[in-house]
Image (tube, helix red, strand yellow):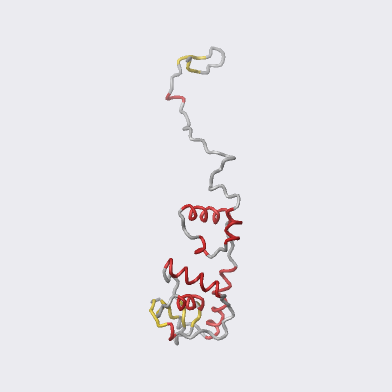
Length: 170
C-alpha cells in the first residue's frame, strides 16, 4: 500500500454515503487533525472516489488543507466498495470500552493538562467517566511496602523455651 498526497478538490464524495457528520463533529475531527496530524489516510478507489474518510475530508477543508493522504483501493469491486463504506463506519461502533482503563487514561491525561475534548468525549461524558475515579489508588486495599523477611538472615538473640520462637530481647 502506498500513501499518496491528493488534492481535496479532485476527490469525489460517495453520493450514497449513509454516514452523517454534524458541524460539531467536523470541528472535533479538524481539532484532532490539528493536534495529532493527518494520521488516518482517506481510502479512495482507482478514480478518486472516496470510500472512507468523508469526515476527515470535511475536517481538512475546515483547516484549509489543499491535499490529504490517501490510499487507493483499486482492487475492490463496486459491491465491495459500497459495502466497505458501511462496514468502515459500523464495525468501530461494535467495540466497547473498558471503563476502568478509560478512566485511568483520561485522569492521567488530565493530570498532564491535556485537552480531553480532543478525545472526542463531551464534557458530561468525561465528568461521568471520571466521577469517583480514585486515580488508581486502591485505598481500600493498599499494597504493603514491606519486604518479605527471610528468617535465616536474622539471629534474634532470644528463644522461647516452650515453642522455639526466636525474638529480639530489646
